[in-house]
Length: 360
Image (cartoon, rainbow, N blue to C red; front, top):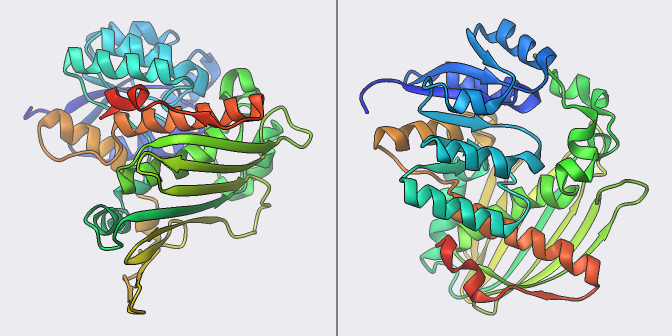
């Protein structure tokens, strides 16, 4: 495709207006042709701020308009499945925010539909687009650490106010340019599907599966909601399909001004890799004691906000590749789904290999 890719954006809330739309409007190969949002107030704010001429209350009308080649879906988690499916049925390419969907069966269905329609689907996992992520993936997958033995993950973040529906509490931190999150978006499990596991662990474990190339085989989870309707603190143990073990700990209880922790350690028979996402650090330590420290990421490199949408545009144009494929995203959905089931049943949950075969 030699012309600009026509993009429609579904959802004009915080994430789309602070990240996706500015990135798309600055991309020389993208043309934002339409917006959609069921809230007329949010939609009007988006239209006015970005100067987009076509706007729809019903996303289905945007999908059928003939004005777009692809869509960005940045809406509450529970709406992703129906919107992605409808977009694919109109033969549109899709960027969907994470988590991709709330049930793995939905993810498999969408993967199958995208393949049948020869449409690209990418998911909003941004950290994979850093040079550190690519190097960590090479080190682990190409055997620099040897056989994978153990992965340790920690993701501590400032999101508790969202889970309480107090979305204005972070105004001084995020400086919302157009819209702030709606109170129910993260606090109501009917919309969010859950708390920390959906909002943050989905980020973390997608990185783990992307770096290692492994799949989860068994998950045992503990979660604490405190006084919330969704989980705030999660502790998950798991086993990979090759027998390696892992732990994932996460809390959303940090306060404004407290530094976040987003880090992973990949241990193997020859050494280990330490990856600190939020601080932009990466190092390798061999069993011989040799330490290789990579140059730190710059602040702009830590979170390349426009990289995911740029990758979709490049795929449509027939160039480049994505680091945020839907197959790995569905593997992540299966992991999170198993974690919630483990908490509900108070037992470990086995994920049969056949369940994840279609994500490859």
